[in-house]
Length: 244
Image 1 (cartoon, rainbow, N blue to C red):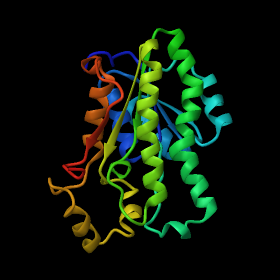
Image 2: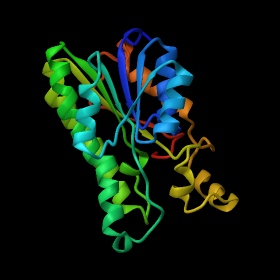
Image 3: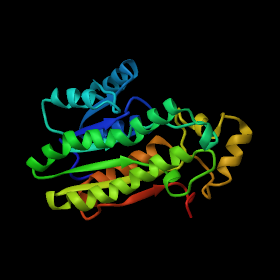
Image 4: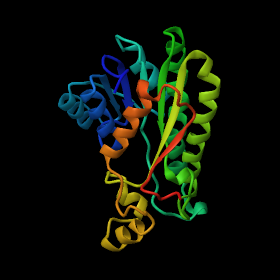
């Protein structure tokens, strides 16, 4: 992919799941990848595996985000806001306040925190690319996941608004809407990883399979590459037809 080789790429939540797949693909494309994650052991292992750099970061904490970015030797040219958490299917009135606040901190505030720190740098360097990992839940919500659905709907709207506001600065902003994938969060979304739950969920995906980190990484590389230089404000569904 043109425009990735040699670029400094920061991927949040890159220790596992979609983030790990995205970080690995950018490294394969020649990017200088920074694995940012709250999990020090898993994050450091992933960085070592792909020849990247690990920096511990709590994306829900503005102080943590600022400290990590201030420590960088080179400015971030491609930012992938991948860090996210889910909720087990729960009636909306029964979600505990602490769980709601953590969900909003990781899924919503994180994008605010990284934008405040990185956008001014991108502006001063003549541009950049931001990719936010949203979800099909923000397009086609399912009962029992109301606050998670809402957090991902926010990501989609924020992506479009950021794209409009930052276009004049040559900063492209896009999102990916993955369907549930073979990641550590799958069991959470299904309310338990059982054969019955898998069959029920797969029945809603026309292509008949869950997404994989490799699926999301392929879309991420394209949207952050020069091949997508005319694409901004898009929320690309990588969902096997789930949202049709």
